[in-house]
Structures are given as structure tokens and as C-alpha cells.
Length: 276
Ligand code: AMP
Ligand code: MN
Ligand code: MN
Ligand code: MN
Image 1 (cartoon, rainbow, N blue to C red):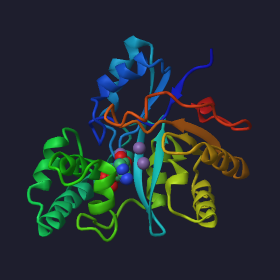
Image 2 (cartoon, rainbow, N blue to C red):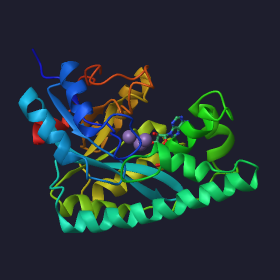
Image 3 (cartoon, protein in one colour):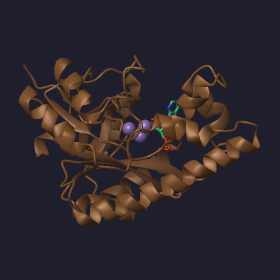
């Protein structure tokens, strides 16, 4: 039987709802053979995930999902199979976590001005890990009855033009690539079909990414449609890039995405896991 891979997942260290150890045991129970933990801008969950994974026969790949500002867009770059203790990576991610801490207060202030007090404190209480993200605010606002689900919160409160929106000042693509390569990791553009870019702009991003040492595209993603698998596989082939697959699992409260339950890569893809 071919091995089951899932190379994109989140724990309570960022905006997932399972601890790193529980995430690893759930992945093993779901029949995953190789799991990458890729928390947003933070690698502090990897040790616990690896420790839980080992006795279960699950191979844990160290990873991170770095927030990048590129040409007016927020783009996510995955660093896979990296040395999570590398100083250059740790120092870079620390800057993003500092920005996140400031941004969370700013989101709270924006919501407060619109008559929603206590959102900062509420989001912090839901964030038990290393950082507070927009998804923590979204969960709090749903709990408080301001919206029917988290999608609704994003649409009405947390995106450009809405009261809880703060313009992202994330890493540059150059810096993020430097941190990943400096930690001997393999860089992959996360969910490339999710960015609201024209085809031409996406290809410009992919070209710059490859020039900077980028190796792969996430072709199969929990947030891609079937058609998008094929379009992204084509881009990967055109640029000589590897293909990755990940659920982008954030926990059981999003039941439409399950761990490791991913279709095969389209034919002609060169899987990223052959290079770990
Ligand atoms: P942040 O990095 O804190 O700005 O938040 C981005 C995260 O919010 C993503 O990783 C998703 O987990 C989540 N997210 C973004 N947009 C949506 C949406 N429309 N519905 C649900 N979750 C979303
Ligand atoms: Mn997330
Ligand atoms: Mn992402
Ligand atoms: Mn993700």
C-alpha cells in the first residue's frame, strides 16, 4: 500500500484546536504515515508532536507556514523538513509573532470602536498557544452570537474594509525564503489557488519564488477544488517544481476537512516527499 501523506496541519500552537500531541495521535488513528505540523509562524509545537508520533509509528515532518506580504497580497509559504532549532528561522519567526501580538490588540481596538468590547481578551482566552490569530477572534465572535459561523465573521469583520481588519505587514518573500533555506528546509507555496490573483500574477509569484530557491507548490490542498489540483499541477510542471499535498487541518470543528484524507496527486507530479 502506498504511504499516506498529509503535509499541512495546525495545532493549538497557532490556530488549530488540537494540541500537537493529540493532533499526532489523531493522524496516526486516521492511518496517516507521514504528517507535517505546519503552524503559522511558529515551530514550538514540533517537539511535542514528534514525541507523540514516534511510538505510534507516525513520521513527523517538522514544518511551518510563514505569512508573507508579496505585491499587495498575503501569501503563505510552507517550510518543510527543516531544522526547527535554526537561529535564523527562530529569530525571523519571532518578529512575525511580535507583529501578531500587536495586531491582535489592534483588531480588538477596531472591533471595540464598532461596539464589540472584550474581543481581544476573548480571543486571547481561546488562544492557548504561542500566538493569537484572526481565527481566534472569529471563534470568539461566533460564540458571542455576532455571526453564524467563522466564514461569516471573516466576511463581516476581519477582511479589508471591515472593522477588525489590520493591513498585514508580514515577512518579505526574500526573508521567508532565507529563513527556510537557512534552516535547511524545503519551501512550498501553500494553497496557491486561494490567492485572489490573476493567472499572470500567480505565475510571477511562482517565478520569483523559484528564483529564490523555492522547490514546490501545494497542488492538493483541503482548500482546493478538483479542477484546481490539475491547474496547480500544470503550473508545477511548467516551472519544474515539486508537488505537495496537505489537508490544512485545523481541528474537528471543521468536519469537512479530515486529516490525511487526500486524493492522489495528478499524474506527472513529482512528489515533494521523495526529497525529504
Ligand atoms: P491570520 O494568519 O491570523 O491572519 O489568519 C488566517 C487564518 O484564518 C487562516 O490560516 C485560516 O485558518 C483562517 N481563515 C481565513 N479566512 C477564513 C475564512 N473565510 N473562513 C474560515 N477561516 C478562515
Ligand atoms: Mn489557520
Ligand atoms: Mn494558509
Ligand atoms: Mn494552514
